[in-house]
Length: 173
Length: 191
Image (tube, rainbow over all chains, first blue to last red; front, top):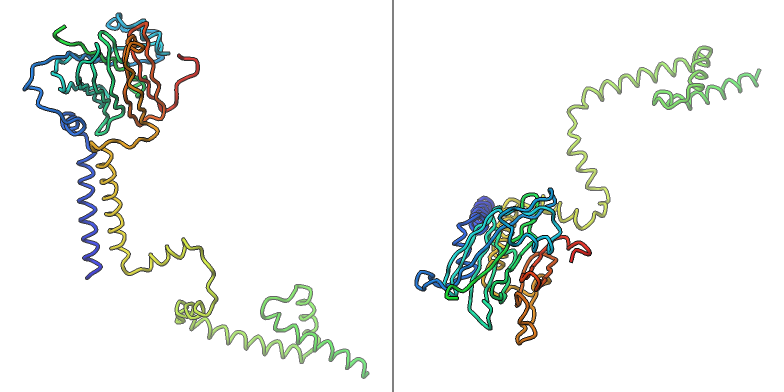
């Protein structure tokens, strides 16, 4: 009798914690993940002040190819990375206030979050997070010069490597 | 005459010593032939062999008739209890003790629940907003100020990543800063 009771208690506990673990790790709305990882204020209260632009490029050695949409940065990509092929998967821009969250869904279940924090000595300080599932793959804080670009590369993507191009500009400039 | 009688007596004694081995099936072939040829000439040994043969068949029949009724498991337990126990490794003793435990199902369930709880706690801890522990993947770079670094595209203040290899490059020519993360490491001579 006691044995059976212990077995039932153990099973209920195991099921309950399995459910909790699943809830923690299962794919969730990226907005929920963002709120957990980078709590901020309601962006609708403040006018947009920064335009954040994110491009998603896949570099590979499949064959010599440069996506026509990458004409402006094609030479830069060739000089910085060792791949023969560069293909633009997605490009998107968002306008957010200081401290607001600009989130971009990426192919392959990833998500990039850019939080512009302020403007200092001609640079936009920001936090950039590359997220996969419920955890950040890369979390960095930087100060980006005007008209400069951050390239974040390395995670595997399809048959190549993911290269993110991240830029930010003040809207009142 | 006395010598012949004595030699025959010695041969019969030798044959008699071999009879038990004969019925146990352990007598070599050449000696079996010796016993058979002797018994053909010696009436006394032949009668003794026949008597032993009848006794053997009788015993065999009785044993086979009762063999199935014998509880050899109980017999083995009694024997095993008297045998010296071999010294098993600590892991074997632990495993055997657990398998024989009356609380085995409850313990198994409790251990599984505990393992899952620890997993959830670990995942929650990792995903919290608390500052990440400074491991090999956390790189904190000096925040350069002043004119010396004003030309670089980006000042990287901090990077945290689970990737084992992180490479940071500021390319002033193209006004770009590169953060490269890798599981394998970047190829030589690439930059």
